[in-house]
Length: 572
Image (tube, rainbow, N blue to C red; front, side, top):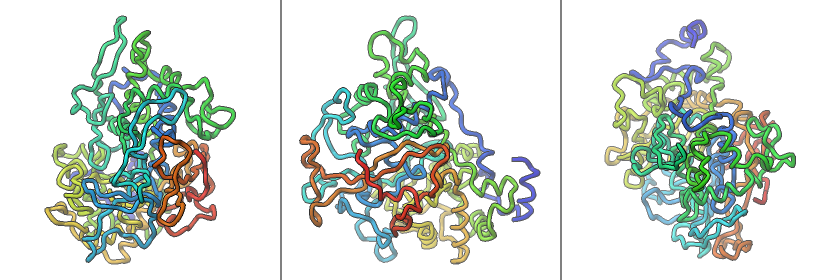
C-alpha cells in the first residue's frame, strides 16, 4: 500500500488503531496481500486458464456426488458457505447423542448454548450431505451410482433414512487460498500429494507419469496447496458426497463419460464458463468434455499414455489442482474497508470507524485470532511473523475459544480450531464450528460471557472476557459488516456460478412421518427430498442481495428481495 493513501487514514483514526497482535501482520487492503503461488505447478499444468475452467465445472457439478445430485457447491453455494435451516443438525464430532432429523431451525433455537443450560443435548448445525449407502459400481452414462441403503441409527426418523449431516459447520471457500491449512482442524495439508488431504503423512500417495515410453508411479509434492488437499477429501467422504466404498477411479469413470454440468443451467455470461456453455443453456457444449478439458489443462506426461487408463488413475491430481485453481480466484478484496484503507475516507461510516477502533483495540481482543487483511491468524501472512512455530496451534492460527467441550470435538488438538476469516461474515452464518450462533450480535455476547465450555483449559491464553459495552459491541458488528465485498453480496464475477438444486430437508407424509422416495427401488428406505433452486447467474450478478442466515430464519426476503431465499422449487 502506498504511503500517500495510508498516512491520512492513520492520522484520521489514530495509529494505535492499526496495532495488532505483536509481530502480526498489519491491517491493509487485501489487494496488498499477494496470492500464494504454487512452485513447480508448471510441471503438471500447461494452461492455467483451462485449469480454472475445469475447476469451476467440477466444483459446481452435481453429477460428482454418488447420488448424482451433490456437488462441492452444495455446501458452499452461499458466500462460499451454507445457510440452509432444515435437516442441518448432527451430533457433535465424537458423540453418539441423539438428534431430531429433518428438524427446521428457528430463531428461537439460537444460541444453542445459554448460561445455565449448558448441559442440554449438544447439537451441531452442519450441512446435509448424502444418504448412508454402500457403493456397488457406477452405471455408464448415468449420474446416479448403483448401491444400497445402509441403516443409520443417527440419521433416520421412524425408520426412514434421511440425508446425513456433517459434524461441523461449513466454512467459506472465499479467500481460503490465504489459509496455510484448511478444514476446521487443519487436516488439509499445505503440501498436496496428488491423492489425499494428508500431504507427507500419506507416504504411499503416487500418480502415474508417462516418460520415455514408460508409465511409472511418481510422487507429487506441491507446497502452498492446502486447497487442493482439502478438495480431494469431501468427494470420497461417505457423509458429504460419496457412498461407502467409492474411490477416485470410480469418480473418474463416471465423470469422464458425462457432459460437464449436464443437468444444470450455465449462463452464456458466466465469467469463466460462458464461452464453453452449450447453446441450449444447459451444461457445457459437447466438445468441452471433461476429457478434453483435462487434456488442455494438464501436461501430456500425466494423461497421454496409450495404455493403462492413465487419466482415470490420475483423476485425483486433476480434481485437486483444478478446484484449487478455481477457488484461488474467489478473492473478495473490494469491501468498503478495503476502499477506506486505500484512501477513501468516506467509505466507512462514523459508527463503522468506531467499530474498527474497538476491533483493533485491546478491549475487544478480536485480533488475538483475527489478524491482518485476511482477518485470520491462520494465514500465510501470519506465518511470516518473527518467532513463528508451525507446531504451535496458536501460532498456526488455531485457538481454544470454549465453543464446544474438548471431548465433543478435539479439533486440531486439545480443542483448538482454525480462526476463520471474517470477510463477508454477515452472510456466512450460523457461526463457529458448531454453527451455534445465528447472528453477529450473539457472537459478541458469547465472547462477553467468556465462552460456554471452559473446562480443561478450553479457553486459550489471551482470549478472555471482552471489555466492551453494548454500544461498542454494536459498533464492532457494524464494522464486521463493512467487510462484505459487494461482488459477493450480488454474486458478481468472480462469484457468479451455474445453477444448483440443493436438498432443503425431506417431505412429510404426516407429522413426524417422512414420505418415501419411490423414484428408485434400490433406495426404498430413503426419505423423499425437498429441493430448492439456486439460479445460475452471469458475471453481472443478481439484482437482489444475498439473504443472511438470520433473514432466512425470519422469512425476510422470501418475497424475492433477497437471493438464495430457498423458496423456489426445482427437480434435480
